[in-house]
Image 1 (tube, rainbow, N blue to C red):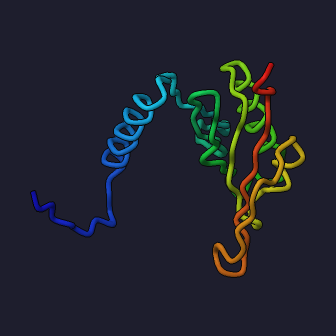
Image 2 (spheres, one colour):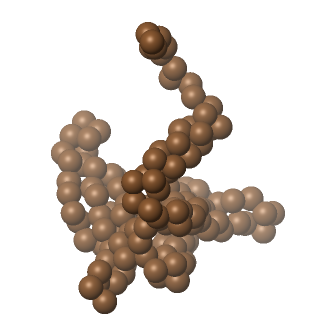
Image 3 (cartoon, helix red, strand yellow):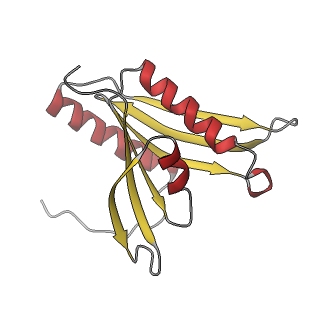
Length: 144
């Protein structure tokens, strides 16, 4: 078999979802864990428009917060803190032990740290002139 390599820099959300599903099936077979669930919250304005959101997943006792966003007009009003607190609370309900998040230095690593996340790694010049910070919050001791 001679697979043809094709440049595709425009994968659709459906194609990316299919890739994620294939990875999940592989990971589940390897670990025996089939408990993946999306985890997310939104905050809407009076017209029902999303003005802030947090999205990630839980699986196998871990969670990754993949996106956190607050519309610029609504920053500084505590919405990110509310989203993060709700995310942490739901992760606890699901038995999550660790929540992971990546945040650039110009985003919100300080917010995560205020809510108990610890810096686990920092990558300088990613992007150039900035730092990519990897943080983790421990919700339960794995030996509990």
